[in-house]
Length: 373
Image 1: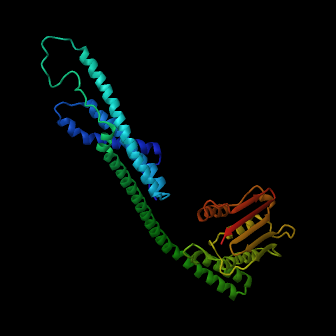
Image 2: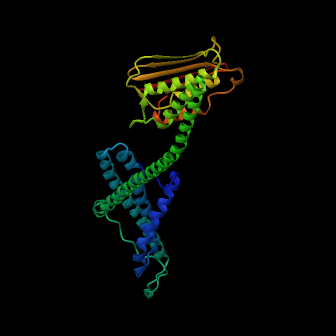
Image 3: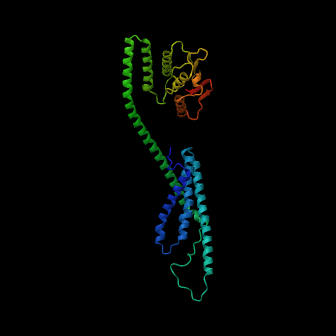
């Protein structure tokens, strides 16, 4: 994992280019300032134009080639071959540019010399002459490669080092973020333990009062609510953030029992399970919001329009479907925050998998969830 210094590639390119050229000019300034004749044209060509060519080699390797072939795909041999080819290619390009620069400078100096008036007595030689010194002819390509190919390889090595530094920086940043998140989570957990402890004590006291007053229905409701809260707060997940399916089903049944206490008369909510649930594990509280949504928006006391919940378990998949008819005053509403929460959790737990199907009409609402086990 790497952390890019700039979000926009164009900004990253420009900032790196300016930094590269600034370092180039700083390294070259002592040489030209110490020279008796300051050939600024040659200075700007070597540290300007050729510096940009060297930068393109550095940036292409550090930000495109190395991430694509080394960090993501681990194609080391292919990367080495391409880097060698690029070193030769960019060295040849620089030699061609030097030939082009020599031809331009030589043509300019020749024209300036021809424009000088011819006199019998030559003018005295001045240090600051009116035209530049005649540039040296560039080396032939084989000699140029032998002399300067190492510099292209050095730039590629610098690109490797810079990219690996970004990778290290990215890992360090992620590690520190995780440590901070873990610390915040531990602090939050310690704070959260205080309120549930008080809540459980209060529920136990109310349950005891309900039993003493022989309010059995109220006592059962309090007990179911206490078990649900205990499950939501204290049930521990395994290393893969899963809980056993039978505990999740117990939690769902407790909620259905609470719904039955809520209404007078029969409750038409059918929950059926097919298959063996023993040993199966799923993410906790992933099914519960779907059932809560159906009970909230569905019709529970009409035998002709019941809420139906079907769970089918196989060795590799859990199929979970819910169907409910809508209340007249809720026909224009869809699932609430619970349904959105389920969708976000699915996208994190099962990325790039389309597991949840929703059918939402004016009169009915249906959900189909297929979880891999």
